[in-house]
Structure formats: structure tokens, C-alpha cells
Length: 195
Image (cartoon, helix red, strand yellow):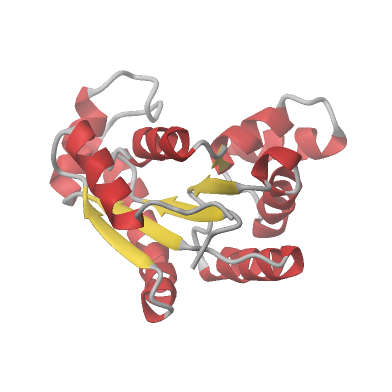
């Protein structure tokens, strides 16, 4: 089968190295790295009413509603640079977002090729986040980090279960050197043949 586009999702708990791997893999395949965090930050800085709404959610520590995140993801994937593929980083995070993404891709006449989950044991993730640069999570207290990881795991298991049932899930051990993880992801995804 030849790909007309390579559409990927990368998921993983805080501290898994997901963001780093997503950037590397997107660069390797020459497709845009679409991080929901970056998209939300860009919109919140835009000065639009939606940006102001997002900024208020972020400032209060509340989650931005799924419909808002889904709309921003849709706007980003509609851009011409995503025509030959994209790598979604951190979306979908729950079953509602998964349904939004399914509907969006169906509307675009596209489908995901692979969903890559980069995972590490909780203790490894906590150690990485509590000993790294302060910019990673803001607050680096052990309890805050463990709460973020637990929240990810609570929602991610349902999402990964759906993708596993669809035969799309690739599970990668992130508890090794970053270069080894990148090569493992590339091997698992395979080399797309662009039509």
C-alpha cells in the first residue's frame, strides 16, 4: 500500500520523552509536528476572544474543553503543510477527543496510520521531571508530578485500548537513550511510500 499522507499520533505520560520523540520523528518524516500544547499557547497569545477564553482556562489550571481543543486541532490540520501528513502530539487524550479526531479525519477523507505510545515506569517519569529543568512542568514537587501521571494513565488506557483494537497501536519502551527510542519508533512506524 502506498501512502498519500502519513498521519501519526504520539502519546505518552509526562516524563516519557514524548515531546522530544514527536519532534524528532516528525522531522525524520518531514511532516509537521502538531503539539496541542503549542497550538493552545499560540491561540492564547493571539488576542482573539477564543485566545482570551483559553488563557483563562490555562491561568486557572483548568483543562481546556475538548470541543475547543478539537476545533484548534482541526484548524491546524486543515493547513496546507499537513496535506502530506502530520504528527499529532498529545491528542487525543480521552475518548471524547478520540471521537472528535475520528470525525475530523473522516471529514478529511484520511485515517491514522499509527498511534505510537512511548511509555516509561512511573518512577522513571517522576525522576526525570523532578530533576530536570524547572521549565518542564513548572512545579516539580513529587506529588504534583505523580498526580499528572495518574491523570494521564486514567484517561489514556481507554484511548490506547481503542487503538489497540483497531490494530494501530505501537508501544515503545521510552526507558532508554533518546536516540535508541527514536530509532525504535522509526522502525515500528516503517518507511512510508509517498504516492
